[in-house]
Image (cartoon, rainbow, N blue to C red; front, side, top):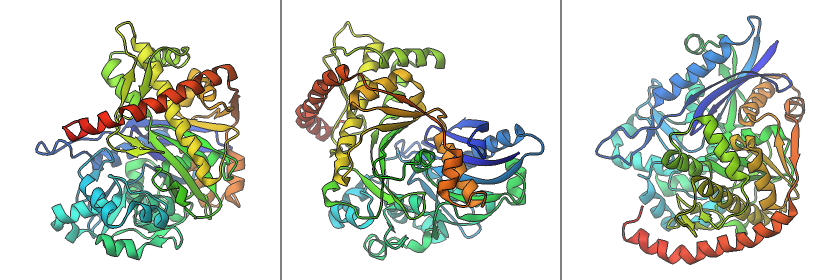
Length: 505
């Protein structure tokens, strides 16, 4: 049997899976991702320890490799990765610092200064990527100012996927979709942007050479084979941005297809034919970047999603087992509309209205409300947030007639139904939930040369879909509540700004 392996480096977990060439999972393994605050003087400085990242990657690969048949042939391996988080290495390939996590806020002053100097509008229209406080550009500026001795010794700055690929095969490279996360990349020329480099003071020679997803980088080294259990000489193929790997198996490279990726971030994504960021999308949080399908582009809007439900579980349901919490979630998602309304902006509003002073709130809260009522309102508020982003896809000339929903939360059928009701659209869910791993595996199969084209690889390995139709009676009711949701956000805006100025976090 022939297999390909996908790796997913995510905020919640590091995972790997082996797939056969029809897209069936043969083996899967997972380890939790662990961020830490190692400096007691700076508890807000949050990192992913690089050795933990590598050890977890090795552990999941060993587990996958050990459970495959003895005569299994592994054609290749590719990695999907979260965006932005990177570290410096020296000429010998040794890490000089840990990955600064996207939840770390140390670079916010650099973000504010850049928006003032270069301009948020110009940033988006030039690179397709809006500036964010955790963008790679600002990590490099912070490092140069606070640890010049590290920058002086830096040979390359590696995003997390680049780091894992380097440890696997010894080659340094970055794909176009991950390069776009840095604020330094120009998709029009598929190279680092000289004007941004000059304006920011960042030496782009520190960045890896960019290549299309699906490019063969090298092969598993002898040392990596010992650490991972993968055969020495196995091809290592360039993967891409995790959400794009997640939508790849769904064959959505057309303007009529819109995908909702449910994870730590809640993403609305559609494919666009060329790189032409519209002025109407300035300030909406939308991003236009190269797709992992060579020669195509992706447009996406995003807001914090699963991180909100993670907060709820940590604070209000920590004692529940996984099974008990899933039951609570199922009941909450299927609950009829109650008197509670929830604003999900626990990390500010990131799109289509960008407002760092926005905050979360339960409206209508009374003593009789239960934990299930709270979670039901949270699901509804997150759906409303998704609808706002979906509606703003009109900036790209896109109007959805159906939605494809992927991610861990798509396993909750009650949540899928509530999403269909809120959007007023049919919602298709892949019957195989691990689409990010599958997308990385498709890139591995294509890069290894098993398929003649990306379309052929997608067609051979894509999962079947299950469709959920909306209850249009509930859609009408939820449309009224959606207006209350928007009104609540606008009404609390002034209060939240005052609270932020007086010390709110």
